Length: 152
Ligand code: SF4
Image (cartoon, rainbow, N blue to C red; front, top):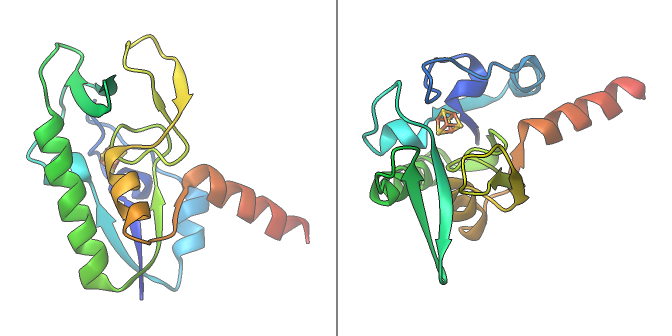
């Protein structure tokens, strides 16, 4: 039984700007567990670094556009499908994904205007994993769990 984890949280430079989101609480939380690192945007064939992207709702359809207006929905969907495949193959028990990402965001994503505003929603990969029945939490949830644990 493995934890599926956003690769940038483990310190890999797969973020759109070529940096990472290394998170010590997530790394500590995963100690002793098998970990499968995923980066759906790289899975989908996007380069690193790459233009930032945000989700825009067009009617009932969610599309993903880069800051230059390129439609990258297909790459994001491919990445989500491959992340789901990784979860299925690894017997995933928990997914820990990077909050606010258009792929990995668990509780929030940016609102599609590239203005820095976030709205309650989820990224394409987080949604696909959750709808497939996997438990999906963010690094913020892990930090809360660790904080509670350290209190007691
Ligand atoms: S797609 Fe997910 S794993 Fe990849 S850089 Fe973005 S937040 Fe991190």
